[in-house]
Length: 151
Length: 177
Picture 1 (cartoon, each protein chain N blue to C red):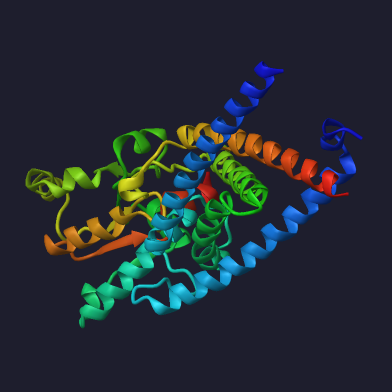
Picture 2 (cartoon, chains in turn red, orange; picture 1 turned 180 degrees about the vertical axis):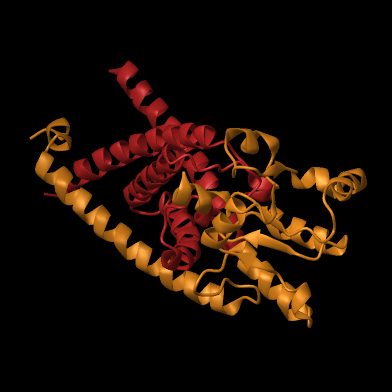
């Protein structure tokens, strides 16, 4: 029993640390994109997947989605933040994979100072999606317990 | 019912999932509004529709240059194909050498922009290609700075007939490879 309580405490601590890490990553990524919107739009265009008409709406909306879901991790409903992160990361992985599959040269100098190999970006996003899915599972477990108690 | 049984209640999980999803989509709408307001308030906001780096470079060059011969010349993939077939121009690939090795326009020569930036690089080019030779410069796509940069460099060094391939190697590859 005592061991179980200790494990629960450890799980909660790990979840809080992961939430802080994910929130910081998304806050940083969102802020950079919000400040450098034109460069971000150029990056989106380089992948040659997104329609040219959709580039600007995505480039101005996505940074704020990232910032808001990062903040949502510490709101009354953290599961929304974790779910949003999982969905966004899934979309990012798909875009990167399609670009790689199509043989788009993303490290040709078109990215300026933020050049990163596509494979490395995919691996990073897979790690982050696993973390956000774990947090989502923990948060919904807690929410459903609270909801059931209320019922 | 115990708490552990409640957490495994699929109906409850599904209801929570739907609520989260609805909230997430509401957040997307809110983010769109914030983004729109933020972009319209800032001085260097992005304009709609999207314009590539080459298009933006072309606008800035053409606005500052009054004479037509100093304005950025863009050549379409179709036109460039005819020029390439008749050997009427020299094609210069300005991407890094590794990209040239992976695939390039037939007959093109590799001159990465870093190489041309050096004084000896441009001197070497002048020794092999005459100033009145028509030249087509190409990079990976229209979001690569190198094409416009090399076009400007060649113009400054006296080359009279220099054009940039519109869409770059990517457009060429999707059309002809």
